[in-house]
Image (cartoon, rainbow over all chains, first blue to last red):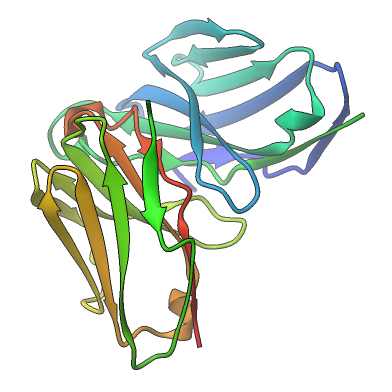
Length: 114
Length: 114
């Protein structure tokens, strides 16, 4: 079993829809939870990170972390065709030999069609 | 400015060639990372430099040789590569290694080994 599981999709939604992307994990030491967006043939772009449990909002994006369920989500409101990309979740533990290491999910391919 | 630059954008090399990839950032970050990413897969960590010293080597073959000449610059020297080394090579940086949850990626160098 992988430490981080992410449904690769693909996920196709109409413009304006609310998109929900999710990851589950097994390592209870993870404390930081990140979402990256990667356009085709480009480097990943950090959308947001969250420490421990809770919600974080940035514009149309909301990240949620439920450590009790080992489940994280990214919601995209009013999705646009420009949101079409691969979304990667990533996680890291805090301290010692964990510094510097991110564990990525496999990425979900999202297409928003006009 | 959260820009990490990488050169060249594309590189084709034979198995007997020696080439180098270059990464630069001017954000004052003191942790820099090399990743390898194959198609439809998440990035895989190769090396981490912290304050210009190699901090993490993820058992990468010696045909890949990293170098950090100063706090803004990171190189990856390539020698005697194999076709399976063809991939997108990504550089990233964070303020310090303890802030690896907030990494900024460059656009990558797409490497083809013939």
